[in-house]
Image (cartoon, rainbow, N blue to C red; front, top):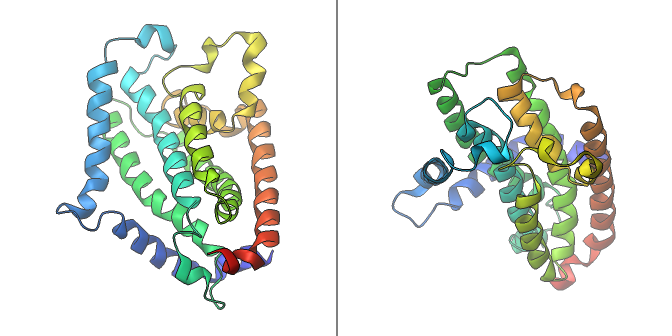
Length: 263
């Protein structure tokens, strides 16, 4: 509870640090923050070029255009992958703050998540524009999007806090995260539909919490399905989130007194 209180009490500091972190990502280049818009646009172009015709009938069973099916899923995955990659360096990348006794360093993983969320908003806005162009208009189901964002943020905080704490003591964490994201990209239904998986193997997808989030974004934008209707994956997602939250806070408390000796 103390950690939650610290986050709420310092919300203005969190926002300021997140904006600063977001700007620093694009400092040193002529276009600066414009890259936050260019990169998603480049990705959309590449996806349109490669997948607008091929593979569609083999991988998905949605009536929506393949580009929208892909982007609504990839948007959530991009938020997850960029947040996790930056959050694991929350402590090692801010050595001066970690060594400052008065600063509550548990804020740093949240700063990284908020910074990635700003880029996520830009990507979401592009997706919405494309949906409007293709005739998919806002519905009441869009109001559940904040729920999925909140759930994903809680997962990222717990998992990210765990990785950030461990990365202070070993560089193997970065290698682990890189491999995890590489494998996770292909075993998460971003390019394909999980309905294509044989029924006897569907239970395996319960061990991938991102299945619920990716499918949730599609249910919000394309399928018009409420978040509680996906009960099985919701239960498994909440279970994983609670486990990572507990592990993250537990490991952080155990290792925090030793950060100063290593960093």
